[in-house]
Amino acid sequence: MTAQNGHADPAKKPVVVIYAPPGMAGHLVPTVELGKLLLAQGLRVTVLLGGGDTSFLDGLAAANPALAFHCLPPAALAPEVAAACGSSFEARVFELARASNPDLRDFLRSARPAALLIDFFCSAALDVGAELAVPTYFFLTTCIASVALCLYQPVIHEGTTLSFREMGGDPVRAPGLPPIPADHLAAAVLDRESLSNRHFLELSQRMCDSRGVLVNSCRSLEPRAVNAIVSGLCTPPGHPTPPLYCIGPLIKPDEETGTTKRHECLAWLDGQPEASVVFLCFGSMGRFSAKQVKEMAAGLEASGQRFLWIVRRPPQPGAERRPPAEGEDDVDDLDALFPAGFLERTKGRGLVITSWAPQRQVLAHAAVGGFVTHCGWNSVLEAVAAGVPMLAWPLYAEQRMNRVFLVDEMRLAVPMEGYDKEMVESSEVAAKVRWLIESDGGRELRQRTRAAMGRAEEALGNGGESSAALADLATQWKKSAGDDDS
Image (cartoon, rainbow, N blue to C red; front, side):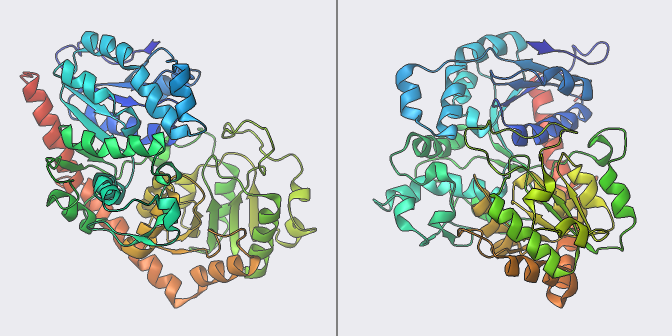
């Protein structure tokens, strides 16, 4: 299935294909933003999606009329492969991408791109790129620190017979990174012999075999990790160090977030003092137990601070795990979710939203003074771009690891203690929210975040490090395609 847009006579421009896995919205947002930047460099861009749900394709194409979109046919796993994946979502996505290689080969033979940029879940596509002599790069929607750790993981693997799960909170060490408690690594790598862990070990070698790694961050935000990678300290012995291209932060612009109608929460923020509101949002899939929601509510009330809170329905046994659609109410009975009288007592200084909200626009609003976040990398970059300090409350995937980088290395967040236990207590919520808004420490954190915002803006500006890295790549691709305009 293909959605093709564009302007007249694009045929002279070389094509770059960006290959994203199915069902990964968090990966798709920066993928589309990268595509738009490559268009501005005089390239044609096709966003290629792994086979899966294509119901969103028409809307995505309509919102980005200069990009082409194509979906590969849905892939099927052999029974023995599906059995080996077990319940691992990550292993299944890796294997579905591998199973899509024949369809990918057919598509690339037709498209004849100057370059192929692949998500890490699509690492098996490197074989197809090599077969067809298409220069193939990784585009990673993570932080640079995650790239450093992924490259170095085989070295750690060879140095122990233990699984990370068996190491508990013992520190895992890698060049250019702070010590990471083993139990803060992504679940996909915790079990040494799991199929998902084998895929990530293989990913290190595949990155080394690629033409380079593009990453959604900038050197000035993560200098130690960058220096460790480019100096070869993270590369397993006997492998070449892949070129590193820091091209971020890639963030959806304000004017493209949400609908043309202004969201009600923005009007509410207009009436709040500058830097006074704590914004709580945990991603489209972030959900808490009913008990935890009540603890959060009690903490927010006790803090005395203003807040804007995006609340999702607590997990329902057997229910489909999906994000709410824009405008869809995600909670049936709001009063039953909170302590008795909570909404009435916090009326005026607190606003609870149970549907989609324009996170990028909220963070950019002058009234917002702090962000309680699940530490998803897209959300982190949006907070940095807005200069909003963070309270880290990681939930799943690589978010605990991101918390370590954010708190211990970048120093742009402080943790909400108890996130790794059964419950974050209301007293902790109250104390941290109050600290963030009222204390000297909170003000220092805000200053560091605003300094990081300045570095990110500089990286993306004319002649900035990220802009220059992307322009250099575009020049290489145009020259390799024999483009007269390069």
